[in-house]
Image (cartoon, rainbow, N blue to C red; front, side, top):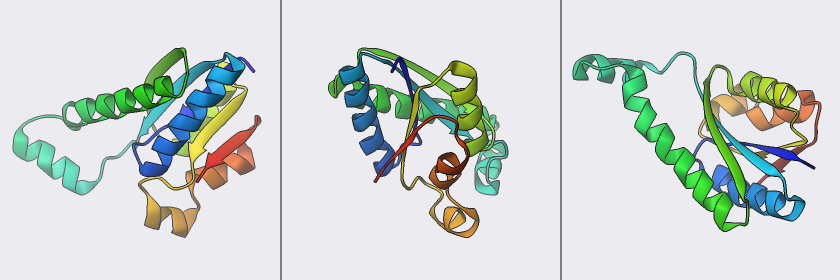
Length: 143
């Protein structure tokens, strides 16, 4: 195993997945790529807030996403990961994760069982369920 992809959204389940992926990367001496995916269309409240503040949604989200990625990096490093990269992409989370896994030669994807989209996940299927069904490499779902 050379490369592990951690899909991270800052949820408690994602924190557990970061620790697991960091340990996995340590044991396998693999690179750990941490990916955060932003929705293509932000919710209406966030759009309204950005207009009220006279700024862009991106300017509001960037520091939050960077803080989440720093948290994931720290957790993975504490668990033993040595080579860690981070990236942020925009789009449908499951599709973006699948594309990243395919294009980067990922050997395994690690994801938390439940992220921030709890109700939506119950109605249309969670990201982890889609990954398990569609990913070409092993997917490890951390509870």
